[in-house]
Amino acid sequence: MEQVRSLPPEQQQQVLDFAAFLRQKAPLPTKQRTPGLHKNTAYWMADEFDAPLPDQFWLGEA
Image (cartoon, rainbow, N blue to C red; front, side, top):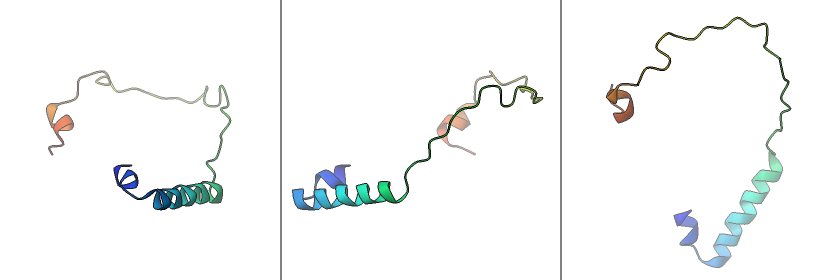
């Protein structure tokens, strides 16, 4: 957005026009939710699901 704001108004309009073109070209699909779709599906949750994540996860360390 910062790059777009730094453009002259005419080029900003070109960016907006291109974004509108892309939106028309590939509209986002709308999905209807189906309640109970997977109600008979077996699932499990790990025992440590609620355990805090280690610092390595948050710091991006391997």
